[in-house]
Image (cartoon, rainbow, N blue to C red; front, side, top):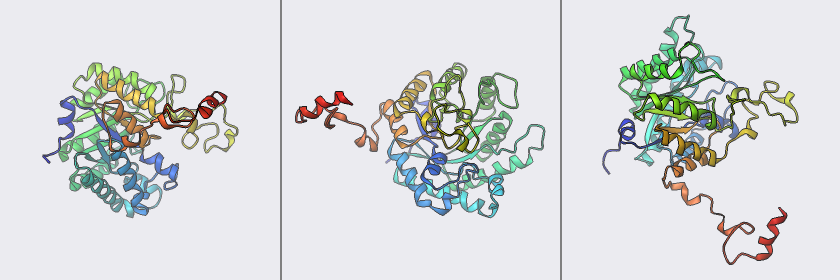
Length: 354
């Protein structure tokens, strides 16, 4: 087998690259991670679970295998009193991603960084810069193919991350966040696309949006970005929730049919652990992938709430057959809805009663 193609080589050739970063919510749903802090201690406590989810994403068509270090930085580890586990956690996460990458040699392996939650444009950048330098140092040592930076609501923080990645000589994808109905970042009054163009011109290899918005509300913004950034190096990996113009961010969604809003961690707000009724189907994610690819965004994927079946649907919408496509839905043998001639009319006629 020849040398695998790198991230930018794929995008510049017009290929879409599929990314899966739904680890945080999926691990919480499976009972391996606590909502609220969202510190990925599962990497050390149950590495086999992280490894298996990474493998599931790979089988379903993800091109990028992500080291699970989202919120695995010094500030988050400080909050839970476990800074001593910071380096072991990061190194183990990278080791897991590389191990699965060895099983799927055509896949790209990525280190992961994210918003620090301590960035303030009026404060000293030193602590933020130190967090990125630390994590990117371990990522560089691991010899991965790229870095994925996620969920930056401040363009200034995103630029620091891009600068440090550029110094390390590792390609970086930067996913940013627009909060609610705003069209600008928290530390800027400019139209967000102008800031993203500057971010790319200053050294980020791929720029775009991730998190907060579901496919329906992210897609229009991707169209705006690709009108300005026309080389395909645009990213879009939405949350797998059905956000709308009236509820554009999953962080403030309210389920008006919920029996007991007082039971929620933040009363009345479905985020983060009562979003189930808003979950998008695999077909909505497939539709997003096809449309985002068509407008020229070539780095596509899932964020919070996404799962392997969403990734498979996206890959298949882009014309790919994955290892897991063997198990894609086929209703022809279903007792009631199937079309196989051997099925009993008795059951098929009864389906009208459903």
